[in-house]
Amino acid sequence: MNMHVCACLSQMCGNHRVSRHDCALCAASCVLSMNVPFIDIYEQESKKMNAATNILLTGKVQINTVSAEIGYGTSSVVFNEGDKMFSTITFPSLPIKLKNTKDLSGGLFDGAVQKSNVLVSHNDMKFEVGPNICSTSGRMTTRVLNDNYVQSEQYQVLLKGALLLQPHNKIDCLALGLPVNRLGLKEELEQSISKLSFEDRCFQIKNIWIIAQPFAALLHHVEQKSENGLSFLKGKSYLTLDIGYLTFDYIVTNGMHINSEMSGACDLGMSVLIREITEHLKTTFSLNDLNSELINQAFELGKLKLFGKEYSFPKHEGGDVSFDVMPLITKHMQRAVNEVINIVGQGEQLSGIVICGGASSYLEPVVKNAFKFLETDTYGIDAVAKGLQYGAILKSLKAKN
Image 1 (cartoon, rainbow, N blue to C red):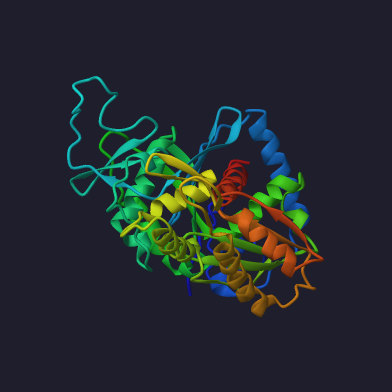
Image 2 (cartoon, one colour):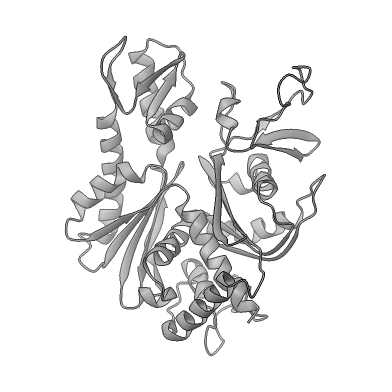
């Protein structure tokens, strides 16, 4: 049986033999692996959370929380800074290995590392990480797309980069998200964090909190929609969809119970669609090769940058070439939604649907067409990281009160 330590308590809930669960957030983070129902604690939790949030906003308690979603496609780090609870930096999950960190411009340019990026040392090598990485990535830059992602050099470098991009050295709670089908890596990830080393900064991390990414997106939805904390979920059932780079994740919640039988992930993330579009555009432009990162960037910018020109994306007409990849996008989104329909049916038992991810705007119309009678709320690429931050703030404040 997996053991889970509530960051806001000095109490373990190994197999839930305790008489009550004192932390709703920790309870929810346990459920996917334990399949355990919850006790009704909404009212007491919401009062604590509202009070805690007010204390933070008035500056009566100083806490430092940092949340990082290290994804296969993009990564986000969120941190509190002054009176801002959700300062956010999103960057490509593409650490660039630097062969030469010397300034080859003789001081004319700003230096080897682009502005807003950071230099990460790892295993006697130097990497560049940050929001401006796309402009420096080469054709051979690739992503790690496998089950060992958390143990990979790429993940470790990106996590280090996320910590270096934010200002806090003393961190009350570091919150991280994992795909639904990767939650078994929680303990291994916690251990790897304790082994991270840095050249120029020393981090003191008091607590680590790791949950499923779509659950974090649901927390972001709660933060956006309600001032009453988790009590917002009482009596409601939600389907939360997270379309990531590698996987398409989904969870079903009934109140504060996550239905593990109706939650999971499938290999229909954006990487599959990007490969299909890359092949299509190679033919359109008569190319032998095409960097798929340009397609990924086109989804973010709404335009394809190629050969010094900009083409509207996903459909372009006129000029030297015309293309329309919207049919490929719709087909892929429909395949992903069909996977969910096979699990939840028509969704008549649901109260609403939450959608997140960088391609959520493309997924939304397909979801609305499939679930015509349900209210749908759509959030962007940083929703998971912001939901992690919301939970981390509440847990840290509760620990100090």
